[in-house]
Length: 327
Image (cartoon, rainbow, N blue to C red; front, side, top):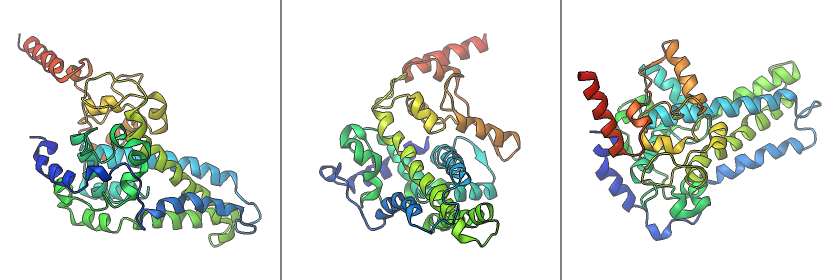
């Protein structure tokens, strides 16, 4: 029995905790206001004298781009394809490293993230879906669902397979520790590169504000386009019973997550770009981690899944393949 089937009752109970008639309106909790503060912090580079004599440097912009794509992998390859869907395996110590890296994105704890994502797959584009653009509109599906009080808590019953690890429970509770550590590191790194000294903080603020905070703001919206826009723009190759679409542009922005219809059809695969022309950098990086032995059992897409249109057709193709092999 799949993880989703095992937790059917859990999802039903959780769906009842949010009144449908109150959904679709963006309500902001005090903790949710941090989201908007992060968007405003990069503007501090315009404060005279704050960023040192060099101002914002090429290094700062380079770190902004680098941290966007590095941490996009942390979202797609770790939060999503590892903790939410278990599409590959790793050791316990590297699992903690992965969780720490994922949480540098300031998208809460891995247990919180994965538990809610599993609900989305079980209830996609139904009233119980945490972020259905079809039912609740763009803004709620994009940011409103997590800014307000509806989904603040971690539902451990939906993530029992990882909630058994005390270190992940700790990291989930103190989810601000990884981004704080990365932010402090960026301040010191910027001081060294821009100012020539680890403690030349006036030269490090620009790296913190542009390299870290601006890239985080971009990362937020890159990630959330999958919740919102891939359920509206694009084409559907498979019959999934929801509004999921494949979108090349969003796949490029999110390192492969834009092949969302593929993913909703067969979420057990690490690879979401099912065909060679569907660019999926997250899958390529995960395969490299497997090559050096840090992860293993990276899941591919079965032939009968890839070349079918719906589950009935997939099962028929699988039956034919088994009969040919037995002949």
